[in-house]
Every structure is written in structure tokens, then in C-alpha cells.
Image (cartoon, rainbow, N blue to C red; front, side, top):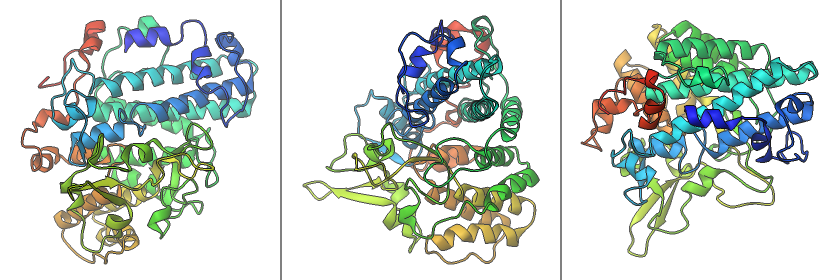
Length: 461
């Protein structure tokens, strides 16, 4: 964390800006290596470009990215969703075969990319707060987006690694000695950032243009944190904010869920150009078999209930010359450029709020309300209503919906099983070598050497 953070913004924001010199936010040309921080945050358009570069980074690496080194692929291979067909020493195969360790690169990818992104976010927050010339509208927009991203990335970091530093400054002397905070402390700080963002972000954005965070995105992450903290009333309150917003609806057509103009999308990441589609489509969609990267596990493919239309619409199949079948996630169907972008990578979507609220209702003893929310997704998938059951049965049904609604999306399976204390019992069925301490990834050893305040290492590593 510390070495990379020190060098990211030494004298300017030019490196941050040049990766998106013609972004849809601004469509302006950046004079590379000529922009001081003061200059960037004296101009509305340049300041927007700084945030556009952060959003591009989120798409290209880290927890929210659909590339092979991103959270979706790494955590899908780590659990029981994906099988890696890459060489044994590759990052995906280290996660799949559980050979990851504190010295290797696989568990390091998410840590390093996230803290690099957080440094950029904090530089924007400082630049905006210190600027005397940015318009109020741009200040509010950028500050709200930066606070939202800071809260969300720390949420993912603590959910993955356990105790972690919560970084809120670009001061190298502070960051190189920063200590860890417990998951509970991180959640509290993330909530503070998200609640501040709420007062600054727009209520919503139009379909097809939900490429920046909104209030609804902040409510979604707050609802998720409330669920993780077992704050049932808050989880219901925040989830209802989104579900009750008329701008969001769950499309009855499963083939439309992952399109650019998805009606349930809350926040999406825009492709790198107006002709490209998603990294997920490029990674997952098989044109030949056997695969060279990843394919779906037989455990996941075989777990769908009879009649579940997600099985037919969201899963594709490719056979090799010997007749062996390989299945792949087919939520995103475009793996090449098109005349114009048709699919954007979805980070947050409304369906999650129904499951959050269903679980919170159930834990609050409101079984009928819980079943009503659960059945919204079951009905959309072509399945019959669940009309009764004790708490244990309904909990299993909700977890089943998480598995089949959100498979291969941003590590949802890993985080859901972890918070329900079911990782070992579930993953051991397909990976007998799974150990309880795998619920946290190791802190990269290189970071512990740079900053001893990050000690102790996570148990088992």
C-alpha cells in the first residue's frame, strides 16, 4: 500500500487524467504531464476528468472489474462458481486450487488496486475541498461521488481481508504508518462517508446513463452494510428507499437485465469506448472449447431448480470436438465491439434490495413480507411462490436466490456465505481442502514489511 500510494500523486494528477483523455464526462483533451493539482481543481472540466479516470480504473482493475484479475473472476474461482483453466501458477488458478498465500500475487491484486484507487479518491476530495474556483454543482458532484467510492471500496476490503486500514488522506507520512481497524470500525466509517454522500449525490440518473453514483446507489450500499451488521430495521428502511423509487423496476424479461438501459440497474461502469461492451462478456463468453480462462462449475450449473429460467437465459454452453460440454456465464452476451455499446457492467441492481429486505423482514419476524419479496425474484425466474416455511427453510431459500440471481457477480457468493458463516460447510463440498481461515484473504507480505502496524497477519497465513 505505502510505496504505491507515495508515488501515485507526487507532483500532479496528469497520470490519473491521461488514461481517459477523451471521456464521456468531458470529451476534452488533456495536455499530458502539464497539469498541477492546483490547475486540475481550478477547472470544472478537468476536475470531472479526474473522477472519470477513477471510474475507468474501477472498471479496469480491482473488486468491481470484470477482467480476469478482478473481483468477479478471482472470487468466483475461489468459491464454487468458476473453474480455472489457466496454468497452475496463474492468479485465477491459485485462487481455484487454494494455493494462494501472502507472498503470491493472487490475493495481492485486490488489495493493491483498491488502495491505489482510494489514494486517487482522497486526492480528489482534498483537491475539491481546497479549490476556491470550482462551481458548487461540480464540487457537490465530485465530493459525493468520491465519498461514495471511498466507503464502498473500504466495505469490500474489510469484507475480504478482515481488519484493514481506513485511508482518508494522501499524506504519505500518515499512510505509511496507518494501523488497521476492525470490520465494525470500518463499517462505521464507511457509513459516515455514504451518509455524507447522500446529501450531495443526485436522486437518480436516467436509464442508460447510470454511470455515476446516485443517492439510490448510496442507499443500496447502506442497506447492504445494515444487513451485514444485522441492523434489520435500517436494512428495511434503506432497501425500501430504492424499491419504492419509480425510476427503478425489475424487468420481467431476463434477457434485458444486463443491457446498457437496464431498468433495474442502479450503478453501472461504462466501457472504455462507445463501441466496446463489458469485460465480463469478453472473459466469460466461450467461442471455442475447451476454455482457456474459466468456465462455470458443474456444482453451480446443476444447482438450479427445475423450471428456473435463469438457467436457460443466463448460462451458455460450448462443446469441444470430443463432445464435452462447458458452461459459461451468459448474463453479458456481447464479447466483441458493436456499432455502439449495448451492455454496461452492472455494479449495483435493484434485485439485491429485494433479497436484503426479505432477509431483514424474516429476521424481524415478518414472514409474510419476507416471502412477498422473495417471490418477486422467484416469479420473474418462472418459479412458483413460496407460501410457508419456518425460519431455517426460508433462510435457505433466500440464500438459494442469492446464489442463482447473483452468480458470478462481484464475489456475491463469497460474501453471502461468509456473513452467514457457511463458507466452510458449502465450499468443502466441492473443495475438500478448504480451511476455515480462508474466509479472509492474506494481507500481502510486502505490505506488512513496509508497515508493521498492519501486523498481525490474518490467521493461518
